[in-house]
Length: 284
Figure 1 (tube, one colour):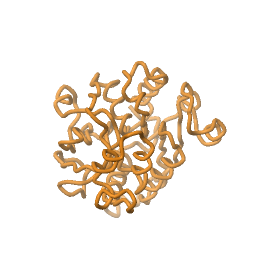
Figure 2 (figure 1 turned 90 degrees about the vertical axis):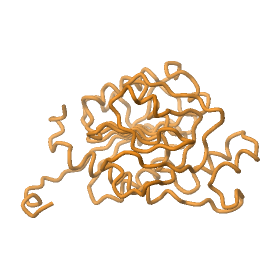
Figure 3 (figure 1 turned 60 degrees about the horizontal axis):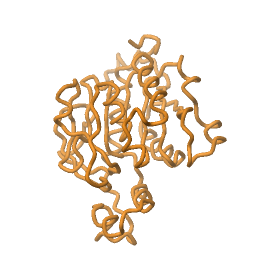
Figure 4 (figure 1 turned 30 degrees about the vertical axis):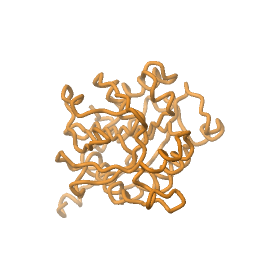
């Protein structure tokens, strides 16, 4: 940025709405905010939950104190909305229309077309977004994808500026999206892998981003997620590419932190800050 442009900058808070359906909401808040805090830009973050869904892991008191509902935010505008949606196994394997909050989620996704500048969909949220916006359905896997996997960068985008040719990312899901499925939509595949399928896809203007992994995870999140499942121990640990020597008694390796920091910083800077209008009422 040259000095002339710098002198004319009008700076304001970037308004971010996070739709958080992760089971352990407080943990997810910390993980995400830790990455967002790496930017020097000022952010104003609100969290939203589905009023039509009964949370089993977070108290109503906590949600009422720290979260909003769609009824509260439906007339507000945001620079960003992030969909942090991870469904339990029984929900993830259901057809989308059978999920108890699907109708409310569809209403929210339709609202976001008008009231939000850039939308980042994560994990099950990415699958739900592709289904709602493009009719692309998730595909079941033979066994759960749970571990740290290599992804190849295959597209050119400011979103992956600073990435190496390949990077590692945690995944924890029972379904996937394959590259051939995206041929009928306007999204560009930016990263993919033989085990994970499509890893990241986005529109050219970065107003729609779909990431199927969990770059926001902390060191121990995947360990906690896996240990709490009912998978046999032999399967549970040996396929993670996560514990040294596949030994769950050893400290998990953190091998995706740099990629995560770069990804979220690029998203905030290139997809939003340099593009969103100063007056959010100008959103088209």
